[in-house]
Image (cartoon, rainbow, N blue to C red; front, side, top):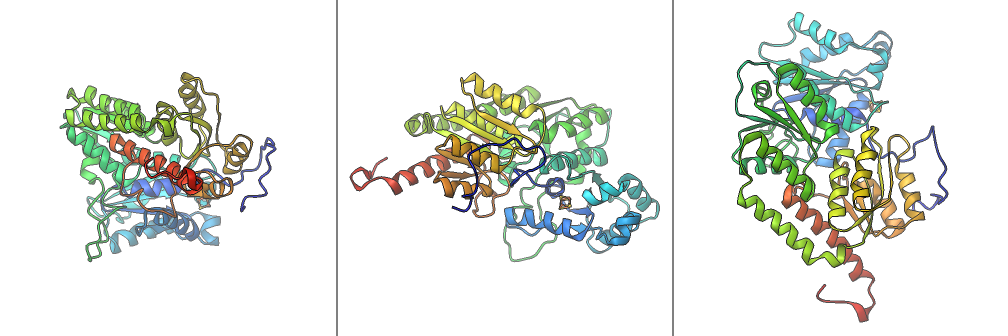
Length: 460
Ligand code: SF4
């Protein structure tokens, strides 16, 4: 009972977060930056920040994460980090030769008020940026928002720094995938390829954060969106952004800067959200959804129908990032499961409204909260007062799952104690199958473990 001190009485808190359901902005900015080919992320702050951002990503993806730091000392903390950043830009291009450096700020450099565009211009003026190379940047103060906002800000930084306006329009569709696993990025590309659509997707961390072991160290893995493709996205016919929080800012900026119209839809988790994504692709390209994808949909429906008795009425608690939780909640209700408690540490006004719309359409009243006070402690209190049959979320939920003996499916960021998330998608219809397999697996494992000998069944 590691969390035995969690009381059942819920007290309203204004100035205290206990076990937050989020992490800091630069972690997301760094992850997004790794989705550009030959990009070197740079953390403008102290060494400790950068070490944390890198280790947070490495512990989840089990891959090395190369990144630089402005390595603030007492001097830079007082007088600003301009000279550190200009030196860092010079060193990085000289030693590591990336195509692009993606600078994100930290709490410290934001508090000082360092002007990153001005410092980047100074580096260019001083000849520290070789011809054909680029610096992009994002402001990621971690005392507001979360890792999701950091991701969104860096994707917007890609548009701001790289996308090129053009009078010419191609038939290409831009896809902004939102914060999903490398496996999901691969799956989103597979679905789009299956529709025969020419597209540019960024960021793309497949073949970067799930790079194959070849026996030869490559400093920049082969994956990641090429800079040229991001530049060309300004000429595309249309942009589809996945996940309102992760992708709206960049899509909107691309429209303002390059006049590329856009639509935002949910990350394709579950059946309805995948339907919406494919229909958005179909509308934007004029191409129909092929039979092969309709067949994949049919296979998910078949599993749900076959296993409905294990899913119907099961009460679920879930936590994580808004763009993931919204379609996940919808998928659970589509399977006649009952989401009871939902928290996200990421602030934002639209989350609770959107989730409640999904729940109310099925007649479900649930505890839904996001922002600073929506933490793992509150989630545990809600579960103690109103128990559930299933917990879905990142690794930090394992303490609650153990204490309350709840079947637990790991989903979201970070997953520190299992593998699979980088390699097997949970998006698209095949991803829905994986989610179903995971959910049914933990239910049946519990039943096998706890059933009396007289009720221990071979066939379930
Ligand atoms: S100081 Fe701010 S940016 Fe640095 S690790 Fe902590 S929360 Fe993140």
